Image 1 (cartoon, rainbow, N blue to C red):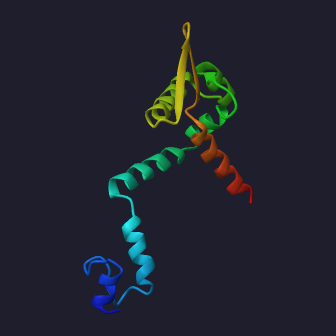
Image 2: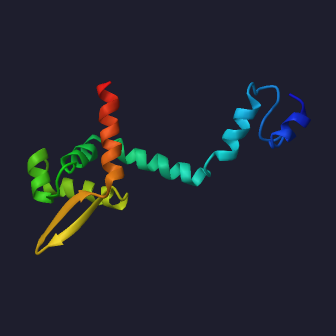
Image 3: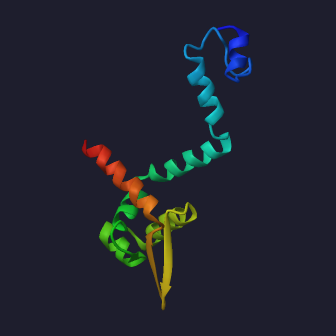
Length: 127
């Protein structure tokens, strides 16, 4: 592809090398719409949180109802301190939220997005 064709689709010479691009228009569109690296790092960090079986088990235990740390630890057969540690990570990642009722703290999934991510993952595995 000539340099003038690259300019027609709005791609700088430094971004695409004409000798290695088969579909310059598609490549240019991808470059134009690619999120900033910082955003992609944040997305990768979010998926890293989902990459831990213990955290997935905790999230799944909260799929339908809210639970306190003691209930989660009993359901999963884990120590309360281990559950608390993982809940802190999930809370910091905005995957779970909590509410206080007297001396008890109840945890639940932060929003429908978290439920959707878990549900879609399960659907994908069942295909």
